[in-house]
Image (cartoon, rainbow, N blue to C red):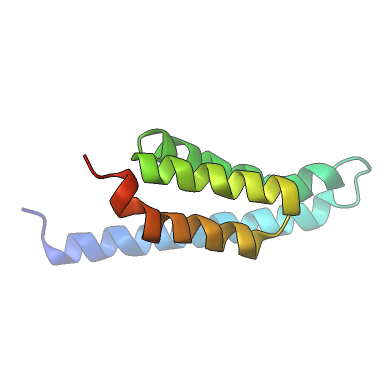
Length: 103
């Protein structure tokens, strides 16, 4: 059995690594903005990183999670509104989950 101190140390180390990754990325991004042609890459990068995290989770997910992700992608593609897309995805999971995942 894992003790509480080891768990807290692991959580603190993960938080530190995530923080350092974000801060380092921010400072590198500030330096790269001056290079011509890199701006579109920097603008698309957060979405790409987000999809790199979500795509494997959805692939292993239930039917409601796959439908919710499809709704989010479709709404983002058509409206480019993060709030509406995320809200719709959460609504599909909340209200559609019991019916879509029922066996």
